[in-house]
Length: 128
Image 1: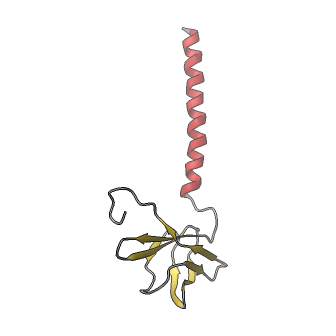
Image 2: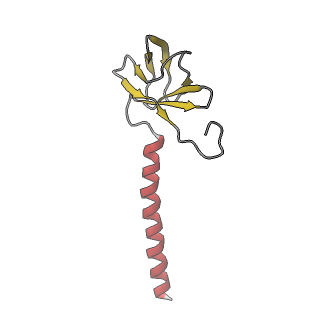
Image 3: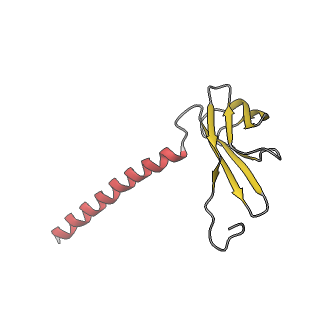
């Protein structure tokens, strides 16, 4: 009986250690680490007749970002006053824009330049 108690204690301790380890790892993903940080994801979706683009912008910092300037390229720009912490917006580039890159900047020293990426097409899906 004593051996089972020892085995249960070792198993319980191992489960507790794993819970603390994985819980701390998940906590890092849900709590902002930097005061000012931004996530930018420009995506192109090529269909047989047309091409659409969208840019996801999310404030991943713990503080709001102010005076955000979005440069779509070819002289197309857009300005936003504020993006609160944790908020996400999705923008579409203006019509006739070549959709090659997007540059995002903000007053807090944020500067991100990214090229558009294309999502992989799956057989049987629209546009494939």
